[in-house]
Amino acid sequence: QVQLMESGGGLVQAGGSLRLSCAASGSIFRLNAMGWDRQAPGKQRELVARITNGGSTNFADFAKARFNISRDNAANTVSLQMDSLKPEDTAVYYCYALIWTMGSTAFRNYWGQGTQVTVSS
Image (cartoon, rainbow, N blue to C red; front, side, top):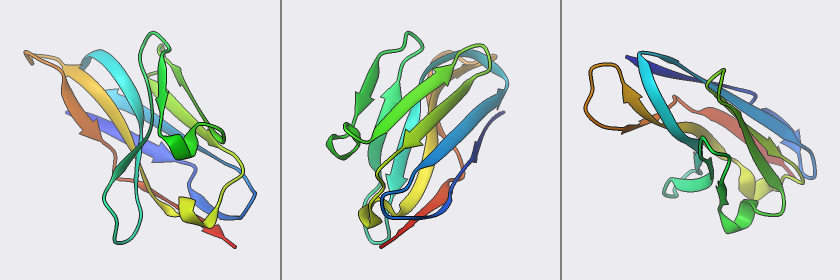
């Protein structure tokens, strides 16, 4: 059993900042990539950013200049710092992790329940 617990969402004005955090817990044997996806109303879920356990990062084009991702491997946490937020960033943000659980034979994708980010104009 694996849990991804997100925190830090909320309401912010355009141009403001928010920091999302996520902690992975449970029967974790190995944890590889972590990151964030988002889904806006009426749109498909899309990748925001990823970070490997070695620190390599990958950002969606819309996030490259405004968002930063970091992780604490010892604590199994990942954070997303979002600056210069725009109304189009309004979405539910989901934590993601690629985890090999105890007793498993391979890595699997896991997502958290999501945290709402609303950016007002």
